[in-house]
Each structure stands twice: as C-alpha cells, then as structure tokens.
Length: 97
Image 1 (tube, rainbow, N blue to C red):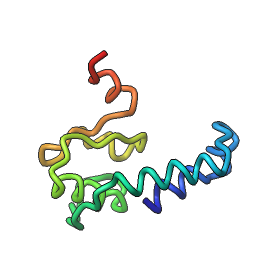
Image 2: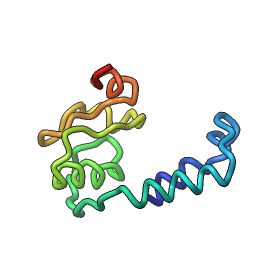
Image 3: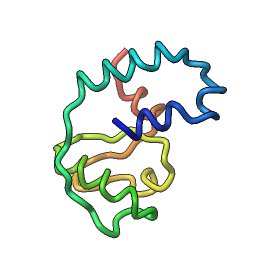
C-alpha cells in the first residue's frame, strides 16, 4: 500500500493525472479496505531488479493468477510460479466486455 501511495504522489504522476488530494485519499482508503496482504516470500535472483523479487515471491505465495504492472524489470520475467505478469493494457484486454 505504501508503494501505491508513493507512486501516486510522485510529482510526475500528479502533474500528468491531476488527481485531487481528496480523491487520492478516497482511492487509497478503498484500496486498503479491499486489499489482502500477501505473505512475505522472497524470490531471490528472479528479477533484473532485486528489489522486485519480493513482489514476485509474494504474488506467487498468495496464489495470484496475474500481476499487473508497468515495471519493465518485472514484465521481463513474463511468468513466475504460475503468476502471469501483465501490463494494465494486456490485463484489460483479457476482461470480458
């Protein structure tokens, strides 16, 4: 949750999307209420960026089917222990109309 909040408050993101602070807080509140913490399960040496290995490990340990990200280092893995790594565009294309 901290990572999501940190990304959404980056100056570049704030300039691009112009999300009002009250909308951002409401979104984060909803996200926190509907999220389920995943177990810590490192996946050492899987990703080009070692700081992303914990994310992949947690997704796999939590039984996720997919992980939606824009991180090129994570996307380069493509699939990890049953978890498909997708861009938001690719994920949305999978959803029924």
